[in-house]
Length: 283
Image 1 (cartoon, rainbow, N blue to C red):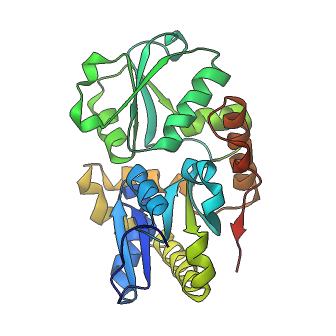
Image 2 (image 1 turned 90 degrees about the vertical axis):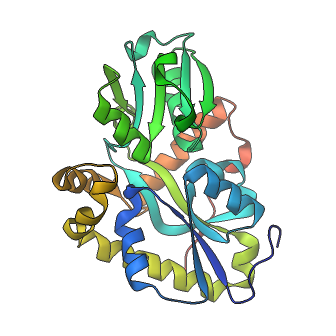
């Protein structure tokens, strides 16, 4: 296996996005899963993408675009995702001018998510028929006033929306659903195929644990939101409404949505032909 040498006591390194949109899984995992063979690795999506690619994690939640770009290395773990069927509430394009007037304007893209960056391009170029310029940066290091439009995700997006700095705010999940009639899959649970081949039982057990955490977490949203809402900060009721809009399964409609998204990206020359068909690990 490529990548960093693992601690011999650790049999699986599992990537988890450290935003509150994973809280129904993440918080339950931290509370209930105590397996010395498993190491949880927390990071933002783009960092987890790189860790999975270089072998410093073995499986976990990564941007769906990471799978599209390197599908020959991975398999998608069935029935797990971070998705939205309509407004997601934390993936926004903020703009100082109407979205349709951004042609030739610079759009700042958060460096934390490749999937959302590519979704912005599909929405602006295919759905709106415009051709902006793009710049990718870590949002913590820039002045928003320098840009006519900014794409932000996760906790950053929630904070920017709360400030009211931008008069126009486009929810990317909502616009995708309006155009396609489908949900949007922002992140997948993906396993390196070389790891899967050597550790099938571990992957089966981890998948089952993640699904159990998901199901338990969705039944405890009030309790979870009391814990995580102050991190933004946002109200507990606002956090509950937000997490109700996130879905964590990977049903046939979400698979169809992934296939359509990857097809659009292929047509725009952003990913290669090997992104499709999707390759799954289904126990």
